[in-house]
Image (cartoon, rainbow, N blue to C red; front, side):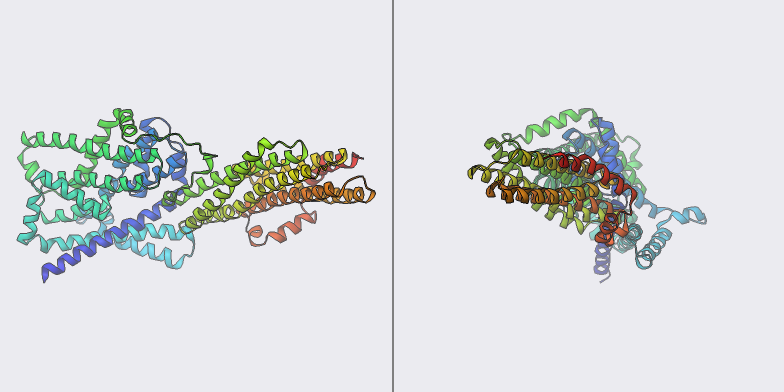
Length: 599
């Protein structure tokens, strides 16, 4: 019965340990998301920089698998290329050893030294749990929740570790337990055990932590442990291979191949060296046969991963070539606007990075919608060119498909974001996508009007053409400002959109009134007049979409606008804002004055 209780306790401790790593890792990812994004964006072709980046990112988010998943997603987003990804993978194996070094804190013998007592996990764990629960229960902000998760995860991790450690003590007295450990004297079995258990548990950090807990039994020697650690490193490759092979690009699959090759080659080389050293009894017989403690396990994992990375660093190009030979390119496919096809659910692992990539993709959508609108307008105002129709239709289909994809991606991302800043940015993106989509729709509407005009043998008068050219230039201007402001995140530029939008509204009223008079005096045909009126409607609506985007941009950092858009618009339309008045007057001089000069 005591053994059964110990096994249950061991499994329960492992469960808490795994959950603690998960909670702490999520908190660390959410709290450092913006910094993580900046670090990854600065990775260059320099392999050493990539290795250091991979090490740092993995040390922060406490998971080499998470780093590799994020790297794979960023390859698909076009942020990283294959060579950069390979260097990050090399660094990820080093960064994952930080967890074991943290876990070794549990083995500190504090004695009467109050400083060591402070760093002992018997003190740290309960303190972390108390701080975490205070942040979660009494400080109701998203940032407090994120930091609270880190503390709670840290505390749970070590409570789980203590449970495993206490469960090992009665197990270590049993003959069956010692017989199982004795099987690890065979290096091949040790590697196999580490590999299989890591695949089951899906966490190399947890497996190393379990080894550290088992080390308190005193029955584990260094010669038993080092093959298991090598097997653990191989086990992480299986998870990576699964992640990199499902619905990803060729370069993403190659990243998985490189990770497998790196760990396999490193394990073989290190195993040969370790076997040679052990056969020659280098470091003395006691080094290999003496019991190993938590610190020794952590140190070996760090040395193993660090030396393997150093040894294989000069062969990065060869690893890339190997991966390209294994995963060959298909026949090249023409992908329309690849900058819009970068949203990958794997980015959810770092919400801040996911929000940043989504913003870039939506900005690319805005540029395509603007360019398509301008082409559609040209069909109506300048000259009908049937050769342009397939291009305009293809871009419109691309915009519609992206809108559906973006909606799905952003809804999924909304469940992952933790910070208020990311939450507001996400709200803005979700409302911007349909606005850009509608601008794209108006492009095909303008083309249909141009075709109708031709089919009915209608023509615009010279005055009507000039009027459309002037208001068209105003709409092109507001589209350019909107796309540029959105792309750069420039709220100051966004402020200049609303005055221009109101001027365009005034222009539409003026032109409709004029055209009504032309219809009455017979200087314009009914068919041409209807097309003219409808075109004004689409031009006005396009500027309205730009206004909506601008308001949502400014609402991100302004609580008053966020709470009530209509009050904000009503207030500035009343002329109480000096900047708004000046900008509106400038735009009136630029666009309405030329209209008044037409006869």
